[in-house]
Image (cartoon, rainbow over all chains, first blue to last red; front, side, top):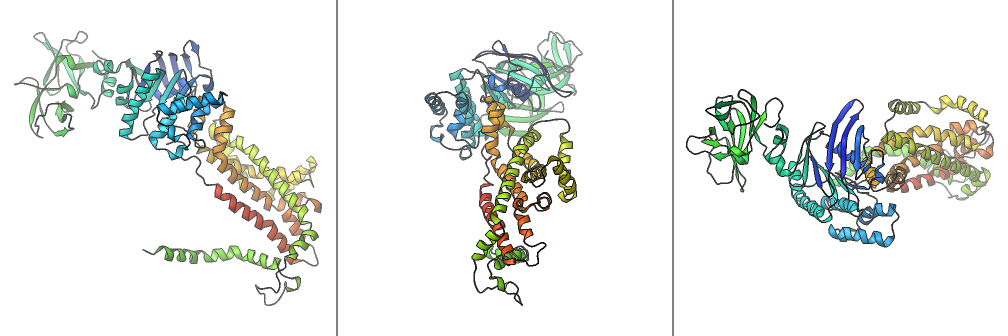
Length: 356
Length: 276
């Protein structure tokens, strides 16, 4: 097991820059998730750690060793591919033992390690089957087993669950997390699914357009997103954002919306009156206001999910979603007043998108 | 909706003229090959014969030096096929996996060579073989057959190689395999169906080739089967048609049977279950 250090890493395809200088320290035994929309460079970064892509500039270290020019086979990294990449002409046993056979390990050791891994992954009765006789979830497990038998320094996962159906994805998510808690191998996991990132990661790296937007624990990202992009990306349904202008009156700060409505906010040290800002509130952090406090909105669509009720409205012309766990009886067309607890709202600079 | 049986009958009726055109020469060939000599030119022609003469084949074998020509044909076809494959596999792999300057040009060049008939080049090739001292040497055929078939084999292999997921090789590298090991233990086993198909095509092309063999081979010991059979017809006062036809039966039927048996192994969908 080892740490992974990424120092000022850039990647270009010809003249086209893909990664603009990535700095990241992945600690020993940590489970780090790279998350971002497609094309943000997260897979490229993972493949650079694996050695499947060259590094245009900067350094990648495993432990203390710079591995920029080390071929993949000598990096001691195991990788689980998005489409599993099982060898179709080999049985499950042969697939899982391939790396050990390449290292010319003794037959008994290979057999013991494969059976151990198969036991952990519930694959023991499939060892003689060929990959094409397995279901998607089983193939996924074999791909993990192939990585597991290696005792590698680092595990890399490239969107390993994206080909599974929704239910299986949730099950496998928990299995992978439990596996990591047991083995504690340093892991880097790439996904575009923020729920996967939130549920599995020790730390999340949010990437966008070849840059890191924020690094932090799942709750840090959720509670204090560094900018609009992270605020929008983390959380589902995503955060409501409304443009407005910061103002102050009688010692109280507020955001004036385009339609003239005022949302009172805690005094912001870094904002000044007249500044264009974006007001953000998570749907689950909206409350029904008492009396004439808050702002009035008209209910458009009501979606009960069982666990909660999602209400879609418009606030100052922008779509706005609120989630209530209480069983209110909302009707479309009804006017309700929404309030936002001061400690749960977010303000961002409208130009830079940075958190205020 | 027609029933399945009705539809089958209809399709066979539509196909029947084609089947007749294809099978007619074979039928003539076969009937002539097993007839006694004096029934060759009866008028009006009939399909029947008084006696089924297997002896025609034995006589033909000795009289026409069929065995020698068969060995020549086997040597040329097998060696040319092997040579073409050994050179095409790396070329096709590079075309499929690597980016290099002039790749598109090279592909077009390969395609263009396919548009030229060997007959156009036969004089030049003959002079080339003269210079190399290979006229009347079976290896001249090996070289030219391999060369003429390579455009096709590279093209064919490359398109199949493209369908083998790159991830499989990458997974092998991550597992600790070198490029060469992953090529031999992962890639080539998956490419077997394509390699077999191209081998069959190359073999058949070489086996049937006539013009170059006629040009390059001057002495009758070195004739391949098509030239040997042709030599039983051309420039003779009396043509032993039953021997000629016995020769053509022996030259075509075993090969046809062998390959129709082999093709069952081609479409096995090796890559199924690998990814996805």
